[in-house]
Image 1: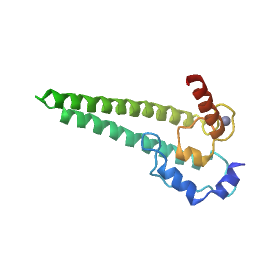
Image 2: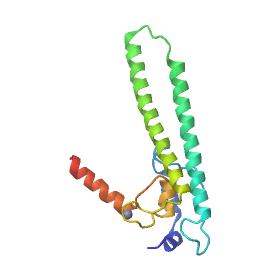
Image 3: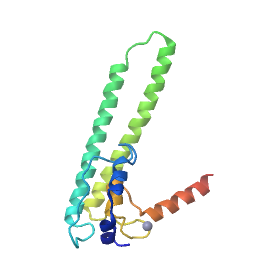
Image 4: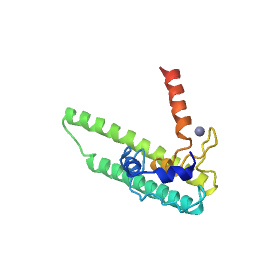
Length: 162
Ligand SMILES: [Zn+2]
């Protein structure tokens, strides 16, 4: 199926999926789906621009989340005389630190993705070379593989690890 026929058969259900899939940590949801013109080339200037804007906005959102986490931890870093309270607080902090670590990694990934996009090395599967597809990129702008290769990798991964 070409990208063109894909966009013609696209339904509101697809858009709903894109908007509800995962949290901010895995996908950026607050966007208007791109409307490709008739016969518009895959990864045209307009599409690249659209995806670049999405990545930038998503990055911004994550940066704000990291800031909020830091501020929250500073506010909460009060003295708790009760050891039980302290233990609870330490556990909370370690969860927040892990979240922050994930967010930082994701920000790095987004940076790398923007670099690839600027180098026009974007939108095609790293493994088999086919078009990843505009809708999939909107749902997951950092995707470097098509759905098939990604699923295959996940199956292989599961076989190796368990
Ligand atoms: Zn592929």
